[in-house]
Length: 332
Image (cartoon, rainbow, N blue to C red; front, side, top):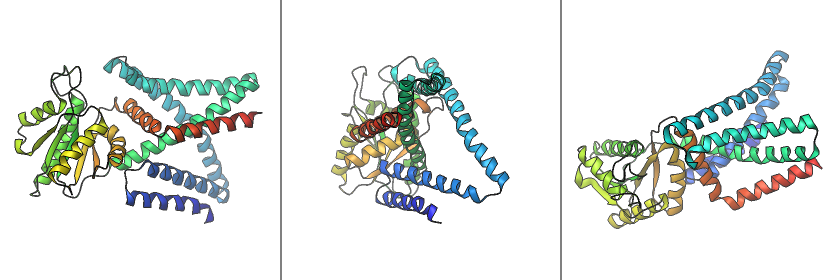
């Protein structure tokens, strides 16, 4: 049973973190460590298993990662092509394609190092694997915890529903991505209104340089044209970033009710990072995600992870540097 002690410890630490505030990236890392220790403990139990069971498990341990890597590379490359075809060639649309090519490059480097027996290539390959392994671990933690966070639905009454803007088509029309957020925000509003306590829905978004009007005004007009009650709509029309969305909306909410509670609505791929930002800016509420087109989700999720990774760049780059040094020393 001692083999399970580290897993239990980190599950408990993760649980404490969630009870304190579920909007913490440290919760994701603690959960990832707990699952890793649990997996190691279960693998250790194989030595007590019958030979056939142990052999089958060992074969699965070897084959599944290999097949999973091939499937992942294929998926990322295919999704990258789809993104380019549907959304055009822009840096943000190339992320899944670049991730797939990056995995291919690391695997190719490993094969080349083994085939040639080159010491320098061996150092580079080991270093690359360690750094990529660390980043991949954080990415899995991010995706796994973001999925769990997204299962959380608002159950208590709130005073405000804040819908974050995301840009307009032609500088004035609400695109499908933003419409999805507005429909989700309206859903939250109607669920609470049915209980007799309708909240105020705040549309949040300023006017970009290529837009004819503030996003919040186009969002509010979209709702009003579809029968949403005007007296329950407020506009925050100064923000240009997610952080400003939340800060300026927070000022509106605190001005109306200092002890407010709210729900922030964005797309599901953006929900966890928005929750981290909401915590940092002191917004009293959780984030609720709306559906996103399946083809759009992988690149968008990679972009969100990259933003979170870079927001802790001192720690992450420090660890990557340390792992690179370990890889060099191990290859000497």
